[in-house]
Length: 261
Image (cartoon, rainbow, N blue to C red):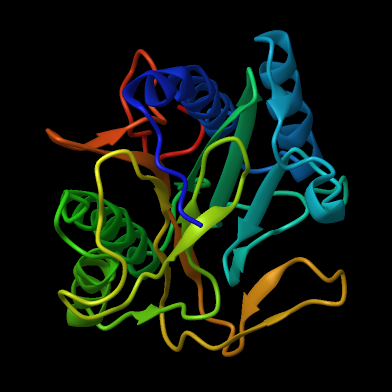
């Protein structure tokens, strides 16, 4: 069942969205060569808790950390650890979620660690633009297929692969609500977008093929061919005036691409 939110409920989701974005920025500012991913996780949890929130990911389905940290060929659900240390040229996807007053905010960004290759930089820029295109298509009367088509067409026009096995989702008092929000589709197909729907739009785009598998830790999803992947996400409300990004803070809904800033 798709849970339609009132305007008051959408407004009540803003603090969780703002804290999720703030956390994403703080973690992004730490991304530089020599930093361990567990350090990123500790900062994220500290930021969330110090602002009165609860990490949305920690313990969710047994996930052991407060962020997902996925590097290079890891698509999503990377687990932070003391042993995993960032290196110059890495691209680092950080997914953060915070719960405030029972509402969830969820967003993600792929940052550059040091100097990325031109190829990886291009992948990240197009994936970010795929997120923007998907959000622009999230207007009342359109369908989820329109959102997916906007993402897929931009990615494939640039020669990239669109992940099929993992998708966006509805969000509210639960991290994952109906409906699923694929990053592929046909115009006019799928669930019709209504005022009051709140969805997490999150393109996951691969340098080459989109086939993937899960590592032995039962969480981390990686590309089969070893190619790099990028991931960007915002929580978006469908309103009469168009899409409204709820994962936004005083600096807006977007982050710097460069880590360490």
